Length: 360
Image (tube, rainbow, N blue to C red; front, side):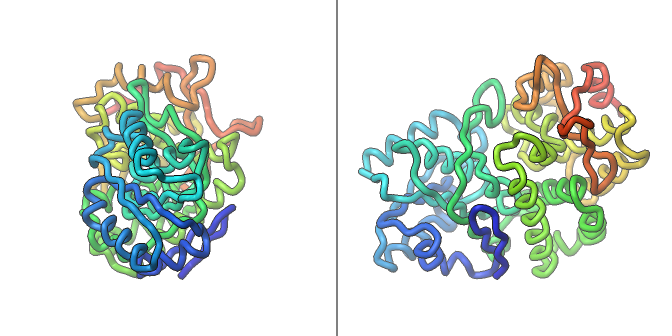
């Protein structure tokens, strides 16, 4: 087992789901646990987790909600909190966020707001959630104006990453997670990016040693950034490379584009934008695009996200300031651009954004 230390532990290993009662008793002891999962993960792992906890003589209940990013909403948040209240879940209880990024975000937001805040644990079951959304304490829901615009910072007591659950992950979700892994290479580690460029076949085959390295290194990068900027006051903005475009796509396409695929499209266009602005070294965008293509990730805006609508949606991005759309942009693979005054995002005029989005 590998432990990455933040203000809490991130445990990475195999078979950890089976050790969950013991791990919880150490990191997040409680007389009762509310397991929150989407309808798919509830059947796949949720009932098993509840049974394990009950076998360990701990009260546990499963609270499932319909699967799908479009259900990461205020309505789902309200429904879950009402159900917890109806079940008389008290302030001495803890919440287990079990599943992918949607479950992690919404369960974390429930934990942040229920009875003014209760402890929770992240147990991610997708590659994307393991290496990204489960780490850093960002919780929230989507609203019509955009993605993750209502939420709170609420750090988990522990993150438990069981690599064995990746065996059941569909290929499309594995590729979506690799978009975030490639992002980590771009923002912080050129050697890691080169490793990912070479190991696409091993990743697709779910080679154990390869996936172990992917998860461990990506978690180290994400945790390292978050540890230096827990509330996104500065450096943490680099993690948003690709996300200004991605979140706009998701909003306009009404979350029919999976997050990882939207991030891939966003990175392809934002890397191109960085070169056009003279920020990124020549060839950076082509290299990023080739790597994304290796993992069979999309590069172009979908028909459901017209350019005009995507640009309009960007103005609701959390990084926007004074009406300007801001981007976290790379200088080259492995290094992000700083603005010279301690900031890590760059305001970009709309014509330059439009040119990058429409270039064939």
